[in-house]
Length: 240
Image (cartoon, rainbow, N blue to C red):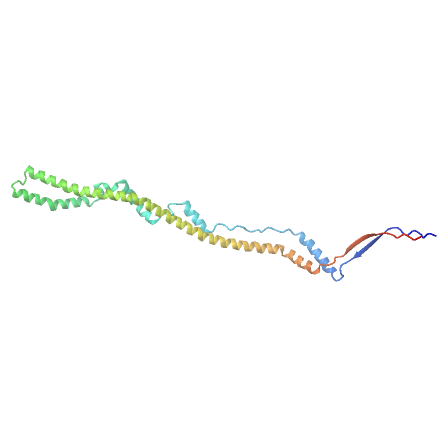
């Protein structure tokens, strides 16, 4: 006689739960995580970039007002004199009030010799005496005024060579000043940026700190959180 047929397939459900001592901490962790997730992480509310430092602003102002702000003192005091010299302002005899005095003194020292010579020769007051004195006066004046003119021409040429050099000196001095201001200003601004960066890091830490605490708590209470497992169990067959 054959055996009876076995029962059909069945469903087996297995339920597991966390350790009972663990459950209050897990409930607190999930609740706090829910509350924290509803608080948006905020962007740093302050300035994130340091503004130009006062010294940097000063450097920019100097550059914008160049050359007056950057002019070398030597340029300011000599450029006008050199320009006048180059233009020939001092080539005119009247530009030197001492020249006429030199000519007069030369006449006083030289002309009496011609009077003495003419007197001894019996020609004092003659046309020859007058022509000789006039020629002597012309020669003296030509020598003094001509020498002064030639000397001033040399100074004119020298000034033409000096003006670019002094101008370059002014530019170099201005560039040096500008570079020094830039470097000092950058130091100030870099320090201010460091202060801002530190404040941003502190702000970000305060924003994320609650999440970090939750993460630490989660690592302490984590483990088997339990769950439900469903499995199909196949029924057996009876023998004959």
